[in-house]
Image (cartoon, rainbow, N blue to C red; front, side, top):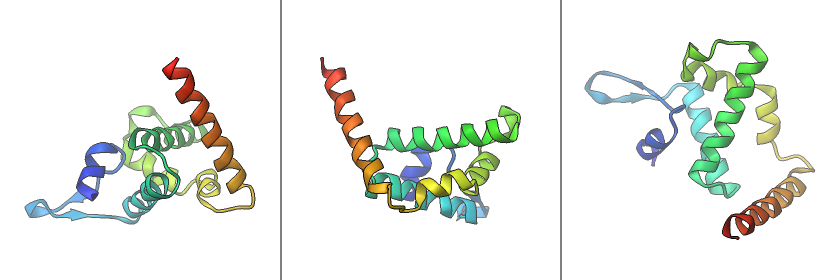
Length: 115
């Protein structure tokens, strides 16, 4: 699964050691945990999860004023450490309401796309 996710999520790029061994740093592990939560627990598709991660990375860029050419790895590390992203990850009292509202929006979008 990890190798597949590395192919699907460009932000997930573990360090490769000699012999092709992968070294997962703290930011990489946090990224994998976030992907797992989005895909396996919140019901996102892989493309949807990638969009969420890219949106969080873009907002981290916008907030910090970092040049877009600076590299996805540093952005991913900042995104995982961003307080706003942690709020998304935490299960607060409004989380169930938010998930219900997002599922309703997803259903309406699916109907609109089929029409």
